[in-house]
Length: 140
Image (cartoon, rainbow, N blue to C red; front, side, top):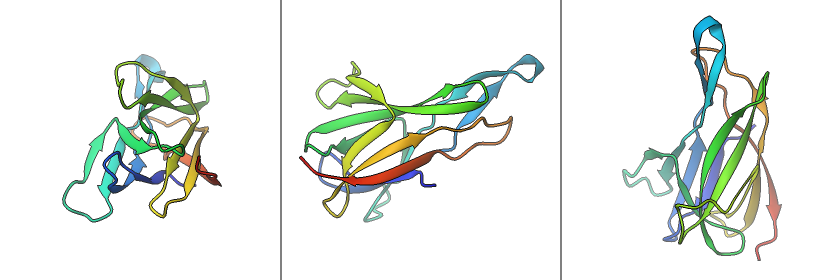
């Protein structure tokens, strides 16, 4: 299981983005009212004191284009499915598409596809790590 992405930012800098654990909001009677979207925790490769949390990840896609994404968690009764909502860099107000995959340039210049896998439903007070699986893909 993995939950971090070593990616190239729009300005060419190298970052690791780790998705925070998924948690839930519990309502009256212990019923899950909402699954809370995980934010990204960003750390630059060179350190530099720029470590921060953000709902956005700005990345260079496998085709060299600049994209941004957010991660969303969806209640599926006894489990949680996760999706990336993708936005073109020139239009962060309108989503282009949403799916389980992210295709990006890595630190070493290869391209990878990360796929979000379904995870167990968190319980009150306990988060569940996000699960990403990776494969090397051709860069366009």
